[in-house]
Length: 397
Ligand SMILES: Nc1nc2c(ncn2[C@@H]2O[C@H](COP(=O)(O)OP(=O)(O)OP(=O)(O)O)[C@@H](O)[C@H]2O)c(=O)[nH]1
Ligand SMILES: [Mg+2]
Image 1 (cartoon, rainbow, N blue to C red):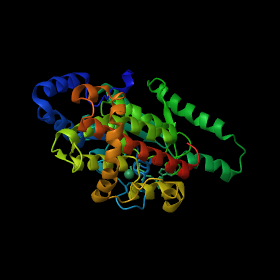
Image 2: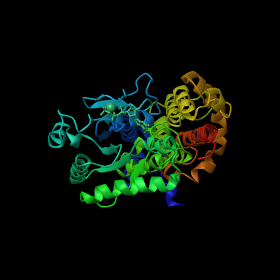
Image 3: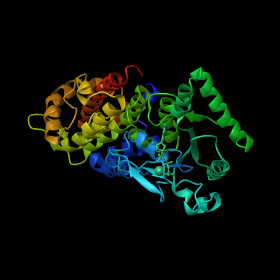
Image 4: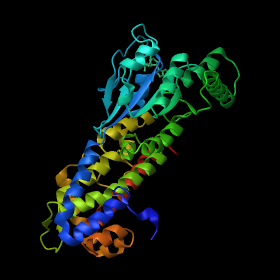
């Protein structure tokens, strides 16, 4: 059996314990472990901080990451005057435990670099993004060194690339975009080297063009960085602007299936009339609604994507081939689920081939293996449609 098919949301140690507990005490014995995992999923807090000098584009970048335009309700306030004076946290719309924090600009009278680092309690944050609108300054470098000292990860971003290129247009100067981008990149990297920071990746972005310059590359690599921080669940908070992001979300959600399935089959399971299986249907419904939101098929996410792509929501919904789109309520999901339960049972044996741990812990044809099959099918269906939506929004990846 391929190692990659082993669900990693539970560690091997936990799986071994589940196996022995289940053997001796039955399903009841494993429910506390499963419930704790679900609770952890709800409580995993991840704090991403966005910092840099005043006017660098921090608020606008946070809005872009959250898939919001600046005039949207709940968006960070942006502007050409000093806007953000206090650390301000923004919740992700679907994952309330993920926070994007904007720290006030460094070069203000209130916050010179040394006082800034003390006052901002940088230790509280999990991941740092430093934005500059031109070359990286001494303040940025000091901050970078401090983050390194704390052993934390960070990204460097050069914003407003669209403005740089516009200037050439306005001046009527002939230019090669790629060459100019390379010059800006080298300039940023050199400014860091001069200050003793060895070559680092600098992402060149426009906060208004999430599908151009290095924004797609940033979106693509952010999940891995977040995953390496041990909190892979953060990936789910990113808006679906590329197929690569969806792929990474699926990987994360596949790992969660096992946990939701175990919960559905073990905690509060009740018999389904006419069938010999026990399910906690509510747990299955919760999982499907969670997948649906993480994959951006809810109305709010679709609206945001449509705005970014300059399309109408109806254009995006037109390519969707699942009823699990837009506003879905529990009753609706239950109806769909009940329709597929019998199909799930028929194919449960086959599924066990690909989920060795479920098979070996809970036995072939158990409620848990059927739940796993149902959730896998639902996730596949939602994934396929999320991919269609991104392709309809942006053409190609
Ligand atoms: N052209 C262009 N303008 C941008 C970009 N990002 C931000 N801006 C503009 O730059 C100005 C400042 O952006 P903010 O996001 O408010 O900057 P900030 O870093 O949050 O500023 P403070 O909160 O005052 O420290 C706003 O007018 C934005 O519209 C970008 O990528 N391209
Ligand atoms: Mg701001």
